[in-house]
Length: 206
Image (tube, rainbow, N blue to C red):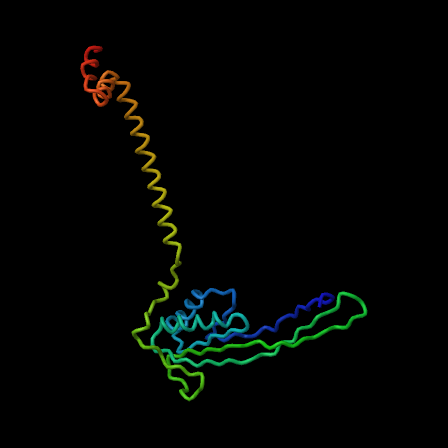
C-alpha cells in the first residue's frame, strides 16, 4: 500500500443524546465522571449511556466502574456490537485503481440507570453493594487533583531554603562582629580550648 494514500472522509454529524457520554481514547475519565454527576444531580436524569468504539473500550469500562462506585443503586446493561467501516485508498501513481478495504470495529454501549432494568438481559448487572460506593458531590469532583500536592512541596522547599540561607548569613555576620569587637577575647578563647596555658598568654598580651 506504499503507492496509495487513505482518503479522509467527512464524518456525518451524529446527534448525541443528552444522556450520552461518548468516551474517546484521548478523553479524561475525571471529566466523564463530572459529566455523570451533572446528569444525575443537577439535571436529575434517571439514567445515562456510555458509548465507545475501537481503542476507547477499556476507558469506557473504567469510566462505568468508577461511576458505579460514586452513585448508589445503579443498574447496568452492557451491549457489545461490531460496526463495519469502509476505508478508501487512492493511488499515488497513474494507471492504478482505487482500493477499498472493510474493517470491523467493536462498539460498546453501557447503560447505567437508577431505575430497575431488564434482569433477563444477558448484559445485565445488579447495583453494587452500598458499602462499596462512596458518593461524591459535583463540587468535589470538579476540584483539580494532583496540583495541591505539587504546590505544597514547592512552597515548603522555598521556605526551607530561604530560612536556611537567612540564618546562615546572620550567623556569618555575627561571627564577623564578634571578631572585630574583641579579637583579644577570641584569641583567649581559642587558645584556652587548644592549650591550658592559653589563658596566661592571652592575659599577658592584654
